[in-house]
Length: 428
RNA sequence: GUGAGCGUAGCUCAGCUGGUCAGAGCACCGGACUGUGGCUCCGGUGGUCGGGGGUUCAAAUCCCCUCGCUCACCCCA
Image 1 (cartoon, chains in turn yellow, cyan):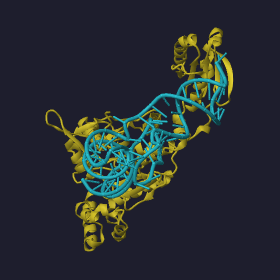
Image 2 (cartoon, chains in turn green, blue):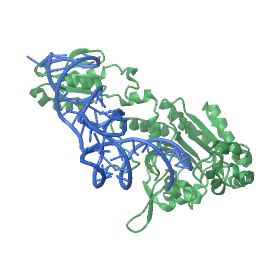
Image 3 (cartoon, chains in turn red, brown):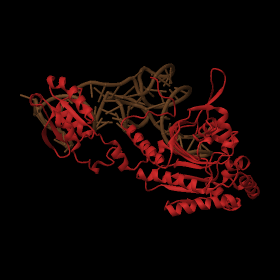
Image 4 (cartoon, helix red, strand yellow):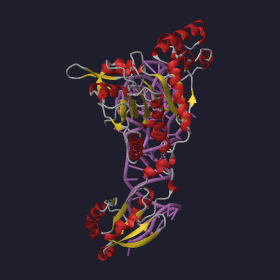
């Protein structure tokens, strides 16, 4: 049997409803802040990611799906979304439009990694970028949109971690500070951190090994070494968050994995996600477009891991998204079976979602199935009903039945009370 | 790239140191209740025990290889 490639997943019904519901909220919220969707290719020239994400990052040096096309050009399945957006901004001269541009995207990303809980080779991100504004207000608006999105999904246990990564000059200086502080104590660090000290000293700060944390605690925070400009910027972002009542944690150890970030960086973590708890990561990238050969256009954005998000979706949101909003039409006997599809089509045309029982299972089995799959009403059609031009509609929850004329079913359906929240979490 | 664990019915699993070991529960279909669910009882469908090789009189059970899955490290969504 042919199996799916490692690290990929099949999104099956009814879980696909959850994804659709989540994406609908994203479009709604991000659209409400002045955003519009941007769709860029799933693969790009390899060079784009090497130059934007950064040569020294793990993403570029061991996680990219890179392949030559038939003409020998090196292409790469996108490992993240921002690079493509930046490229599109340049290529389509979006700088000539009124700035800033608020753009969101939803779609798959690819990283060649060993599978793990919450980690896939093909995974989906929901991202939002604000390009063309360098103000703290832009960062704050972005975070507000993100916060609003999570609120609408019903989350109440997420933590926003925020840090100042400084400007690139600050960071270069800071790397020297770290090296100077840690080199003498090299032996106290774990093997990984000794390597990090050479390649990416910032990473030592968020090492999980306790002994490393002890050592790292003595290193001054980046924010203290950073220049006045970046410190003021992030302070103003924080002031806005407080004013908006958006709770966050100032995490001086927070370092992000992509080279292009500067100043404001943040993560959203869920306490219900085990090892890979990061639900969302983002930050400011004022040099990215310039590094790609364009003008100095500032930007700030984030990406939410949709797979992880769906995994910890609040029960109430899930229940609402999974409810089966349809009439279950069960024909009994040959004559009814012949008439069922036409009846269903007429109801569908009148705006009523209908699922017809087409396997011929017994009424008993059909009712059992209706109950199990969360239908609210079953419309039974037998010889008597057919003769009378009615359908016997049974309300599963109330266990009551009434005869409803064929043409009156749409009105009856619309007259049903909103579904109770009593079935919450039943399918989770 | 490194390390560990696991692969038996659609699902969750039992099967002790090799000898009725091919099973249970759930699910599915049917019946008790000839057109009425969420309970109960009864019956039924369903498995090359991941695949290949080896040891043995005998392997789901032991050994080797292989494929797949899972978890952790690294790193990230």
